[in-house]
Image (cartoon, rainbow, N blue to C red; front, side):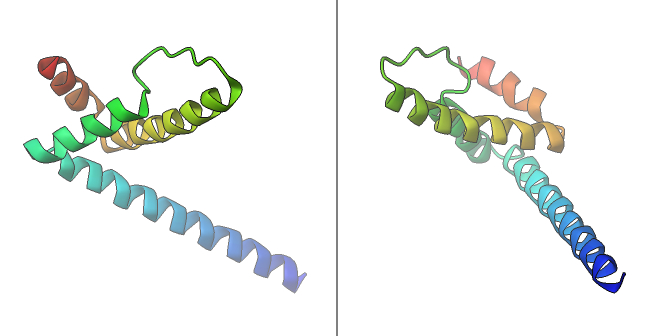
Length: 97
C-alpha cells in the first residue's frame, strides 16, 4: 500500500510541476506580446514553422521534417491561447500582412 501512495504522490508532484511550467510559459508569451520586438519574434516563429500555410511536400522525409516544424508552431499557438493573447497575435499578423 505504501508504494502505491508514493507513486501517487510522485504523479501529483509531476502534474503540479507541469502546470507550473505551462503557467510560466504562458507568462513568457504574454510578456513577449507586450513589445513590438517580442511580437515580431513570435510571428517569425509561427511563419517559420509553416503552421499557417498549406504545404504539400513531395517525399515522406520532407513531410516528416515539415510536420515536426509545424508541431512546434502548434505548440506556440497553444501557449498563446493559454496566455489569452492569440487574438492579439493574429491581429498583429494581419496588420503586418
